[in-house]
Amino acid sequence: MKIFSFEKLNVWQKSRKLSIKIYKSTAQFPAEEKFGLTSQMRRCSISISSNIAEGTGRHSPKDKARFTEIAYGSALELLNQAIISNDLEFLSLENYKEIRREITETTAMLDGLYKSQIGSHL
Image 1 (cartoon, rainbow, N blue to C red):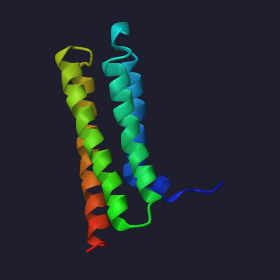
Image 2: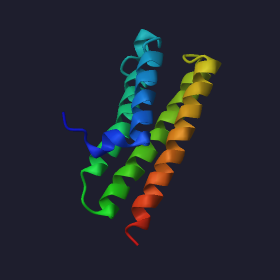
Image 3: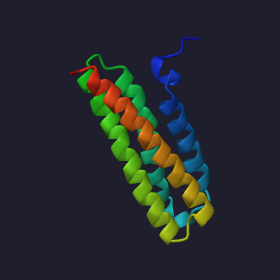
């Protein structure tokens, strides 16, 4: 089986695990949030790893960097939703802190990836 380049990226692996955590965490949300925060948080979390993957299929460093920027934006959007979920007590404080830590680590890795992509463009 062919292994694609994005599968080797630590940031993609981390963001994939974050998605799994979000899916499991939002499964406990109230039923009325199925089409609200639950759906939105799941889509954001998937967007991070999906944009990393899609970016690796681009040929120019500028295009690659653009998809990394989109992934970063999705991570910040997810953080906002996690904060609100904690405010609403849908997430326990412990779960919220763990998600926030994982998002912080992911965004740091995305920043490094972006800088390496832009550096190769200059």
